[in-house]
Amino acid sequence: MIQRASAIIVKEGRVALMHRKKAGGEYWVLPGGTVEKGETPEEALKREISEELSLYVYTFKKVFTVVDENEKQFICFVVYSEKDKLQLAANSEERRNCGEENVYDPVWVEIDKLTKLRIKPDEVKAELIKLLIPESHQG
Image (tube, rainbow, N blue to C red; front, side, top):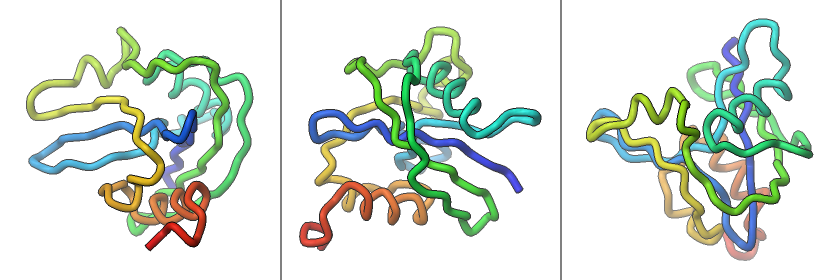
């Protein structure tokens, strides 16, 4: 089973997401990536967030794990960071692969906008909304 470690980074009513435009589609994902052979999800989380966002992960806490329809396991952590600026690391694979047909842009999104976005996979979106939006505001 493929594992992916993802970060939930929240600051001042916003959550960090990666805005993707690929193969004619537009969607958002949590920052993170695949757990490599011999690596723990925690190690993958630190590596991926450093590679993708130029952020150093100081502290984190595992908050949920889901398996999507393609049998990928998403292990999600709340990450605490002092930095407010999100940017693709200069040497990241994502930056090298960006172009008109492949957009990979880190953005801050207002938490109350999450229900309206196409966040992939659906299972992660559902858990993210449960975690961040009070039940009375989820309609």
